[in-house]
Length: 108
Image (cartoon, rainbow, N blue to C red; front, side, top):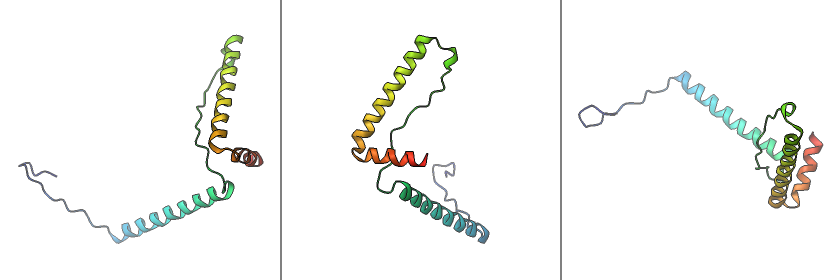
């Protein structure tokens, strides 16, 4: 913080009260527990397989207001995007991709 004369003034950080210290400890414990829970979840369902990192864009399309040609073009483009996405995933994960798909279908 500046003192207005080109110099700097040190501003003391206020000390935590005992109640604030207890709250900080509780938050830290909760964060550690949450991190542990996330580790258990990720380690349980797909322990031996990596995560999908291929994001997709959800499109809210009004099919009722489309003409037949627009609808056909939309579904054709959608199928192409799906095939390309699956090809990227197969390239990335190799043989594990089929295992990932099987496990995903078990839980759905």
